[in-house]
Length: 164
Image (cartoon, rainbow, N blue to C red; front, top):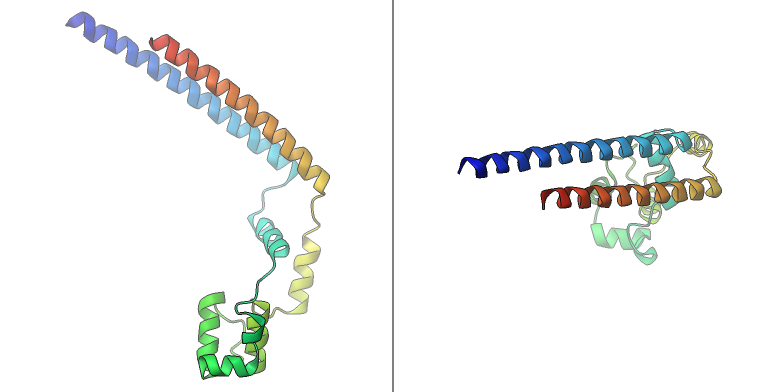
């Protein structure tokens, strides 16, 4: 019984050592990938959100025929109800303007109107990254991920063979 306990202890120690090596290797690879990405694109969550907003663009909240003033009046009954619906869908309004014309344009655009200065600032601050740079980064990252996957599989095979 003592021999079995000793063998089990040795096995657990080898597994812990293998796990530690594996976690260390994965951590190093994550740091290397993060560094590669940061070399090409500096980390900026606000910039990523701006890029997503510029690329996607807001979609209309209702079909075009239902965005007319008469259709909205028939659907909601009051401008306050339509405004409340928009605030639920789009978040708080920048203004409390509740005219049917204003509300119909918001339904058509799918977003609250923004000041021209704010829109121009967001476009100018998003200088854009060339498609070529992005494709190069993607290919480098995919190559690196493939290398990491191969190393991980080799480490796991060694670990399994060592335990067998």
